[in-house]
Amino acid sequence: MNAFANTTSRVAIASALALTALAGAARADAASDLAAAATKEGALTVIALAHDWCGYGDVIAGFKAKYPGIVINELNPDAGTGDEIEAIKANKGNTGPQAPDVVDLGLAFAPSAKADGLIQPYKVASWNDIPDNIKDADGYWYGDYYGVMAFGVNKDLIKATPTDWADLQKPDYANAVSLTGDPRSSSQAILAIMSSGLSQGAKAGEEGGKKGLEFFAQLNKSGNFVPVMGKAGTIAQGQTPIVAAWDYNLLAWRDGLKGNPPMDVVVPKSGVVAGVYVQAISAYAPHPNAAKLWMEYLYSDEGQTGWLKGYCHPARFAAMSKAGKFPKELLDKLPPAAAYEAAIFPTVEELAANKTPVTEGWDKVVGANVK
Image (cartoon, rainbow, N blue to C red; front, side, top):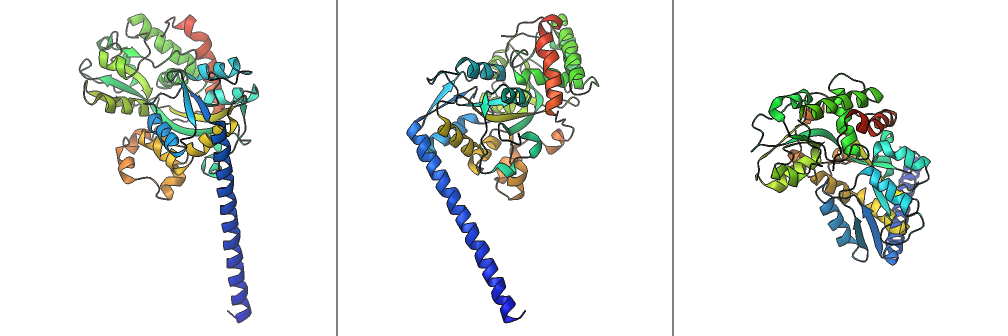
């Protein structure tokens, strides 16, 4: 390389480094400005964030520690996705504590929330790390984490742990099987029904929903279905000895129960549906800057690691794993990778096609009021 070329190369490298430094400084300034604006607002209202769901308790605590000037108002931790949508609609002109700033929605609900003008666009700094197939191109919603449908089993009451959906129809499981919410509004319950339909050979979408309703109608007719919203407490008390729920919820409940009673968490052999949840900011957010800052925190390395601690696979899982950003001890606590190999990731269209027959047909086909 001649002296001229060598000098040119050094100049090019120096210029690139300078541009990178300027871009980094600009991002830091923007982040500082956002934090200041959010702190001036002084509050953030969230909804449907149970502390044992996906590690949200620690995630919320982490945000509070980092931004002590922002008070978090937590609405209805046990709400379903449908309840979140209704909360936005009911508080369009309300700037008080009942108006959610941010929502955590089942993927099937996100496109309609955008179409109805209920959410607003915002792209976080780590936007490029979020896979394209789980985010809206315009930034109205973006995937945050996923898990797979599984069974949580009270081993004091259920000696033979079911290993697949078909097992739940056995007389051994009379008055034992439950869902985590109302299938007319809970994304988790709606996808449990789809999962049971796929286990019978149905295709994802409308067919999966209809087959799933038939499955639960039979469960209800035989007396195996319990119309009680399953959670850690109902499992422990024996009201719902078997609960179909996301693996991360069940694993957190198992940890919380500390062996009293002992609890199995099993991914079924068939119909393994993966459920993606998404984040969005309300179009009517009373604290828009705090909402944006919350999103930046959730999609930061710290926020994503917080979800992994809660047994969820965060949206940036692939990029952060490749960069070696997750502690090995956290990765080792996840269920075996083989449990996820058969997972089916329904498309937005398939989720919408499944949702309609389930929400509209539950009363007529199954006829159980889950509460």
